[in-house]
Length: 378
View 1 (cartoon, rainbow, N blue to C red):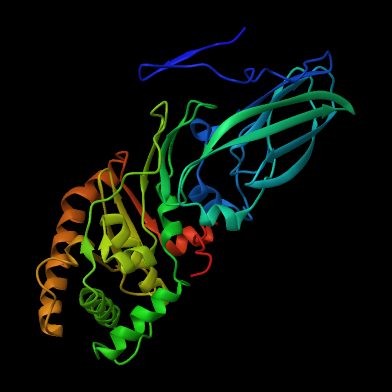
View 2 (view 1 turned 180 degrees about the vertical axis):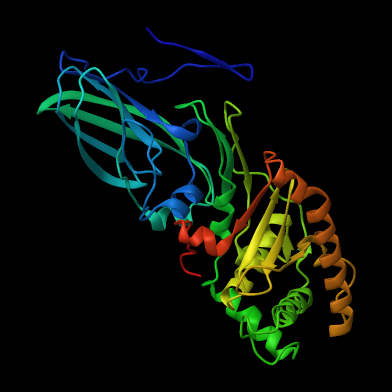
């Protein structure tokens, strides 16, 4: 029997039969497919967290990729069951196989295969697309059939920074993904550094020295070069789609070349841009995450005992600076504003462990496996 949906006043009748459950539950095991993030695949998440993960503590009875979002939940009726899983996403991932042994009978296991994503394709995805993910399972050589889930591929610019998990019911703050937009290897970074040298704001970029003021002087030189570029504040954060359940909160973030080319940046865009340049010259930046805002900080010494902050939305305030001194005055204003914000709101919130506040140390994020998102062809 055909079904019809009423959508915005229109009656939509499918021309093809509805997808039916194709997996077979036998006496040997029962299983079901799962997909995290409200059945949406975020390339920004995949590209930042994929890779080696050492010392990660996995949930009980969870086997596979610590950062996996496609899972098979399975219960075997026999001990030491040999499970084989095949997963494919046409156009986005090569067929991926996964084998596991379920030692206990009657226990539900979560299997998260390592998906062979087309990472280059994901990095190029700048719009939202529909896709199908297909699962097939066998246990001890017995074919248990297949099933599929319709998902949506998001733009690589979309960042899912807060998630209420459909699978576990847990809330997850994924703000660390913003560190993926800090890309110290991007060619645009070297271009900005060269422009700063041409402006003679500093003689050279050397990172940390014995004098903490040298880090601040290099930050001022970068600020001056970006002001000359007239990168202005633009509050564009709308993602390529919306979570159907409202359990995933995301926003769009520009890559650093997009901010430079468009001469526009919101608070996150400007922060990751400035952090990328600082990190390139060996000065360790910090992204200061607030519920509705972000600004950038940086350590003034290698020991990480002293810091400075900047409100990057003030980069494009007023007219283009005519001199280094004029730019320095605006830098001081941005520094004072951010430091006051940190001391009066952020620091107390962090001490109370209030949700929505986080310090994202880029060097620390890299050590934890948060990668810079590549820009193919850039």
